[in-house]
Length: 318
Ligand code: A2P
Image 1: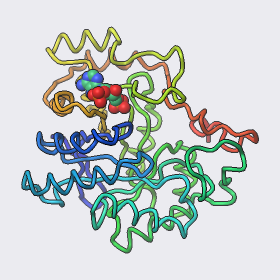
Image 2: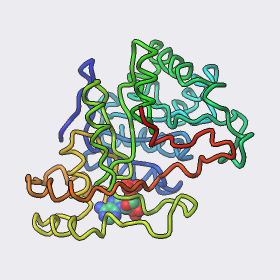
Image 3: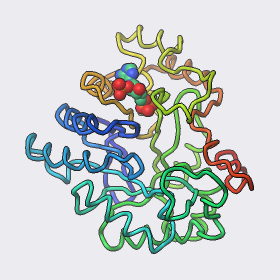
């Protein structure tokens, strides 16, 4: 399995198991199935609402499959209601307790968007948000670094940050984010982001690598393009006797990102890991390069407010 290396030498497996949209009642079995077949990287988040079940499955798997905790990379994310510096550690501790862990390998600021701490569910109006003037990202970031200094997390990073936001944050701290987790797939290739991150020693994780067609309807458009049904991807899969999902996952690995396909189906979990064995050639890579639209499945519309507080979070320039 290919690994990517952090500045201090720590290594993360390129292919991990995603747990967003993995239903309670299914996610635990998925984590166990993944660890059993050789996954050593699990991607979690408080807002997925399933960390307790993931935690029990981790504990069971460590003993059932004789796996050392240190050999599994576990990422989680700070939800938008906990951006105030004093709220960061309590949120992290809740996640650690749910996951039954002493420390996380990586903790990410989930979105560059702050909700009121009391908010349950998703915002309905402007008054459910805090602006980034009220809770500047650098303050949240410094609280993340404090948690790192205390040993509660080994690495700190962000998610859904634009290049502009990465630059802004990096200019205000000696410890820039070590990871940016973003939507990446052949319809949204974001080469500029990859270049910026590689030039600045920031690793990148690709989410929604298969197009996340199991998203809730409120996060879906009527006429979205399908990645798993794309003809070019199918032809490449047939050429290698592989599946479309394997092509999409290996493409992400070839671009030196980590990638976190979600599945709760044991067969597909194994299939996805086995994409590591697929060899995509230059012709395949160049055919896939031509598929860039760009099309964003998670376009951030769900965070649009009356006052446009969080407008253009992905497309802001600078
Ligand atoms: P399932 O969990 O039933 O396997 P993403 O990782 O982009 O969020 O996509 C997740 C979606 O892709 C889920 O609907 C998941 O369904 C499906 N999926 C995961 N692995 C595969 C695969 N190997 N082939 C087809 N669909 C897959």
